Image (cartoon, rainbow, N blue to C red):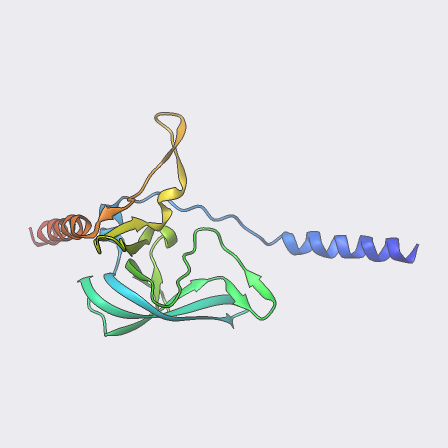
Length: 188
C-alpha cells in the first residue's frame, strides 16, 4: 500500500512538471528573410561551448572566432547564447536549437538579444554548416534545417526545404547579392 501511494505521488509530481512545457514553432524563412532580419551575418569557427544555469534555465554559450563578416560589425571573437544544454546530470533539449563543437565552421545569421548578446536567428534556419570535401578540398554549405520537412499549405503536403551541399562560393555570391539589394533598397 505504501509503495502504491509513493508511486501515485511520483506520477502526480511528474505530470505537474509537464504542465509548464510549451511547444516551439518557427516560421520557415527564406535566405532573403534571414538576411533582412539578421543584425549580423558572419563566417565563424567554433572555439568552445559550455552550458550553465541562467535565471533558472540551462543555456549554452558558444565562443566563436569571426573569419568574415557579411553584414554588421563584429570583433574578432564573439559569444552566442542559445537555450538548452547539459549541466551535470541534467539536460535540457530544445528541438531546432543548433549545437556547435570546437573546430566546426559555419555562416551564422545572428540577432541581438535585449541583453545585448547574440543568438542564432531562427535557430537551425540561421545556421549554415561549412564542410570541406577531403578529396577535392572544395567547400560546400548546408542549412542546418534543410532536413526538416515543412508543410506546404498550397500543395497540402510536407516538403523538404533549405540549402544542401551548395558550393560555398555560389552561396557567398548569392548572399552578397541579397545584402546589396537590401542596402540599395534602403538607400532609395
